[in-house]
Length: 455
Image (cartoon, rainbow, N blue to C red):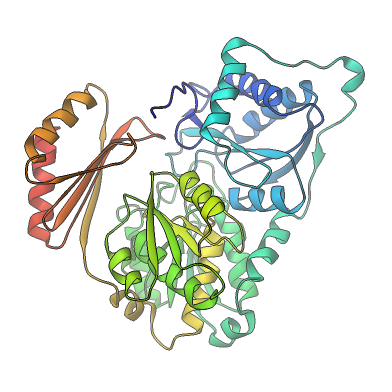
């Protein structure tokens, strides 16, 4: 079913700070969130390092207070840390001020349920109804007797929660050399703490907190991580982890300095979860955009893959409703349900170290054991593109000889002999996302060029 939402995308509300996402808009959305939650609800608010974060957080907390919400503020921290504390300490929900992987000029608002998972699309629609109908709740002055309460120690508690799920002594005995790329944001705080607790010799790049993201673009990609990969190779580290702006993603660079896509690391970590957690049904959830290598590799070990729509919330909700050992995305999101039902960059980092500590192989050797596919992803500004006509063109071109994969109206996926591709509108940026995977480079290049011509 196509969404009727006007403010929320696939992962919260996002916009250019102080131009599209203004304090006025944040106040209105905050009052709508306040109306959605019951009066007296306890909401935990946090933010990443982005410019305007404090401004938007203050607007948010003010509007929530006016709605009769008991507001708690966790300050600057990764979103998985906020989500962990929401569930662990029994909050009614929370709000994170972040634009995740978007460029520096963006900021955003994510609403989180009491289980720590981003709220469902149906709830976002209800919040929008409150916003557009101006059906807010303003409590009388006598009820405005709760100040914002500062919550201390959230990141420490979160790091402790991560470490509960790995063999700390075994990892410490290996004395791993690691490089951390924190994208100049909050992942720098927690992944450094995890590495220190696990006895790693730690090197750093882009770990100074800076809202302008001077080191690289917040999204960890082949292009943005080129300098990090070069440093990793020169330092001869065992593994490198690179985060996005709110640190729910982890992209790894192996011991040979090669940047590994998230579906490769997700496959390895899911295999490790299956070995460790024999009590769980051996099923893994991943979106239809993830590589076929996951299915090919995991099926050898009796692990079944189930596909979801694109978006971590669909992976999370599938794990909650159906059970399973893990979930992952090709963008570096990894979900380990025994920790929490959301993607978590520091958990993925610790879990990868746990896997390496139990195998006498380099990280490069481990990645080399995966099936070989080639892939490429590009983004094209969506202005001027009629997606319906474009999809008709693509189906006309490929529909006779290829299979049209059901994506639940989430873009178009075509599967052919030795290749597949996806064309879809981004839910977080004004771009068209194109992903192509093939068994051979020549097929990949030809397919990508043909799609570009059609666009």
